[in-house]
Image (spheres, rainbow, N blue to C red):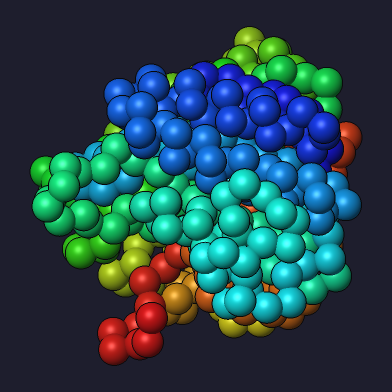
Length: 380
């Protein structure tokens, strides 16, 4: 990871360096206090974050931690999310490393097993010789004797990371459900300079309500690029349109007077297993099913400045497939076949690995992943 601290709102990236553990522990505690967690729970989070940070420092060649607040579930539950991304040797035996008491680094938490036990959700994926991604989420726990419901794994995950040296990111994303019930998921957005959350799309978990997803890469980088993507976010949430081409046309008008940007909008209908897409500029979009990757094509242009004739595309959405949108802060030279078993993992692990594998250091970067439901009767 390009070693930068680029926090905004409730999200902070922290580079791998000698102060990583102390800074991460302090930021995690601040986030936990902000949402009213008790001292005992904060101490557990600090211990878990220290364990992960020290492991990263001692075992990885290069890496970064992301700390943020996220919401998930039909009745939103807030958690502190810890995401660790590294370039390193990988973990040969994940099952063994996840056992409590196993620590090759001599760290205070006594291994990843303790982190997993303290977390409300935990997952890790490693590619040998390339690196590891770990995600752990911690929330305020119920009182003794109360049943704990698992923290739901997001169906939609977005990550944004600014260009090295910048404090704001010019990329932004948002997702909202269409025609969901009163218990449906709220709109969710990720934009540098605002509170960032991981989209849950939990509204589609039962009735598979269609989702609208938008990603905007503001032209250039820094505050002016962030201003353009911020206006795209606001216009997207105001819009009542459901067709991606109509939404792009509305965003084109909203971005007039800004730098403009590359924008992609997708409508994902899990029930019909179809995706409708419209993209302008250098935003990449793919459907990944197994080891195959199909491309959803964008047209040249700059939303807010030069808009070509808008043409939408539709494609089939296979059961269990992943929809990937990313800015040109990630190279397109990644292959599902080169990342064994990754696309069977959660949307969070997929997004983080793609950022690690394909992210470039000379531009803002953003990636959003939506997991389509598996076929009825399919295994977990």
